[in-house]
Length: 501
Image (cartoon, rainbow, N blue to C red):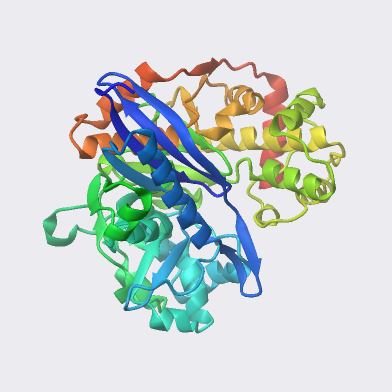
């Protein structure tokens, strides 16, 4: 391996899988290689749906060890990101209280309405600027209040999932800005403590009204914070002493940092289990329109805000695939996409964000039931079901883009699609057709790339996010899709508005 290359490790944990990605920078271009990949998913126990957090910790340390071996111990730093909203609670000795609960667990059923009874929808949004979703940390914590959970009484520290792993890596109990904003426990418009540091702070007055103990919420640090070296016992296990840097610890925050954009008037979609579609702004948008349209303001790199909509994404396809595998027919995503490409277009449409689609289960049956309920022909074949899911997702992109442009008062083009979902070329083309906008896809591993860029910024190897994005443009291939829409898509969009209204 050339001695002049700098090595950075990005640990990227998604809701379906995780990866340890080695980034190598030669001063001009960045190369990325996977050193370890592993599955992730919920574990069902009598107490509910949980994450297998100890197995994930083993995968994390194994990935670090493999990367250290790959570069003969010459790792400049390591950074970790995960999905949002989920968390662990620590007792006063720093021990984890129970297995972290999965955001699709049923404990949050009815908790949004309970929060509205206690505080009110408008007040919650004014304090947080976050989209209302029952999986948010706020409603997970409220469910513990309502259920008089002993864990909440014992807890001394709240740490989101990446913050928990960073604590185990370094011993630092802090929350990183981008992941803190996903909780709906954070007020982006509060003055920072002491007049400096990150934007905003914990929404303590809101939390107190909901009965959530504010003592558990720790210091918030910005992306690019050097948390410290690996703890001695971890360093001994992995065979290297390495600095740990908090990137944008929310995976979408890291992914958006890697958008290969050269201007400011672009929209992005971080495409995977979830589709997160939005724009990058200097200030949060918290007003009557963003409340009415249920948009969210999440933290980004460099004090930016990701003004976006969380959309159910490829979850409908993933869960359909899992259902068919349980029935004895295992099909690859490529095979399912090819079946969808051959199915009749724009025959049936669903609302991908319908509550019936949130939890694990027989997704094909739920899609057919939605169509029957809304007076549409129910898709029967596997290809028809997947096509229905993908076309509905593309139509939701159109609705989201229209709302974004309405609220921001400007046209957004192109649409940059990043992340693993870019490998679904059918969905990319459907997105261009439905929105009537040019779509640019790539890089696939945007989250890991953005993670590495923030590490490079933290250590002074690059000066700005703009410089990092230029490195992405110079280092990774992208693909463009031109829109081929027309009256059929306009008619389908009218039907979409009716079934989602």
